[in-house]
Amino acid sequence: MDALFELMRDPESVRMAAFTADDPSDRAAFDAHMAKIRARADVTNRVVTLDGRLVGSIAAFVIEGETEVTYWIDRSYWGQGIAGRALRLLLDLVPGRPLFARAASDNRGSIIVLQRAGFVITGTDVGYANGRRAEIEETLLRLDGAGAQP
Image (cartoon, rainbow, N blue to C red; front, side, top):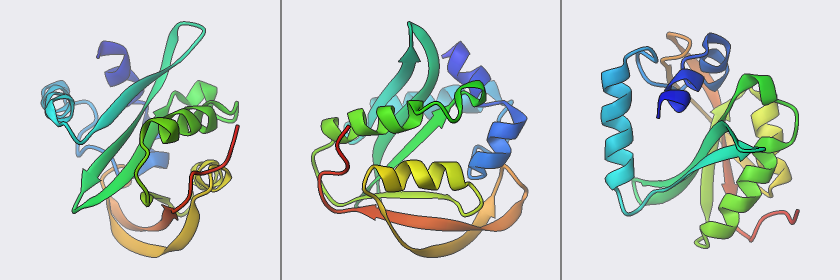
């Protein structure tokens, strides 16, 4: 949990993810949130590792009756295909469809990862992003089929 907490505090990662905790440096809030997630039966939550080193996390969770995916990769590993590989593995673990995802519309890297996995853009929305302290546009995506193959 310590390593994951540190990853999720990186200022550039927080800005790019945009829709983050109100205060990424609040360890008590992080611990409470993670305890709640780990106790939920409708959450599939995994760490992402590379050569035995923690490099992120990925999850699927139910919100308002829809299963949504989310991931967080250590910034020093962006652009290396790790998010895409982790997403393909998660899709194998979560058989139900459709699945949903959202990303800040200017987070092209994340949108591309989702599209390569078979997610299709369905629209946009505007919401308050703690990571930017402003309302921003987010891109909404949906996966109906099995997703892209490795």
